[in-house]
Image 1 (cartoon, rainbow, N blue to C red):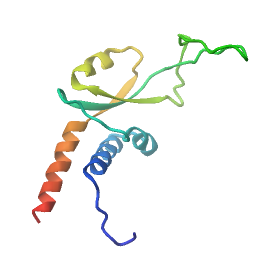
Image 2 (image 1 turned 180 degrees about the horizontal axis):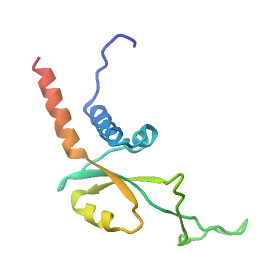
Image 3 (image 1 turned 45 degrees about the horizontal axis):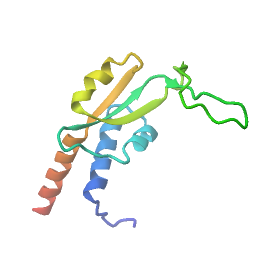
Image 4 (image 1 turned 90 degrees about the horizontal axis):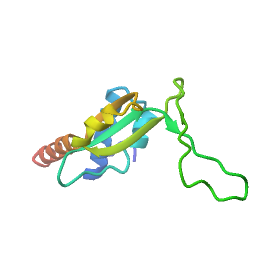
Amino acid sequence: MNGKARTFSINEAITLGVFAELTRIGVPYDVAAQHSRLLHGFKDEAALLVVYQGPQELIATSERGTPPPTQPSGVKFYDPAMPPMVGEIIKISELGDLAANPDVRSMAVVNIDHVESRVKAAMTASDQI
């Protein structure tokens, strides 16, 4: 409702925090919104949301009426004018492997655990006012 304060759940606040971090580092709003949804963490390690650009593997085709192929085509496509943005949540220990992947052209990384800590601290502080 216009002019009335909105109450956010902790999950909504974390989602907004991750969205803000992505847009702050230059990820387009629509891409940031798409990848800020369905966040999760890990019990044993910090979670990172990684949004990266790289080629996409083309889906193998089949003749009409025949079953689709069970294996990807192996053919990769990259359009520099419209690079696809892939998002995934990984453990912090997996970041090096992803960064070393030759198919990953560039990436934006947000530490979800850090955002969660900041959100919880802000919510605690606002409760004490």
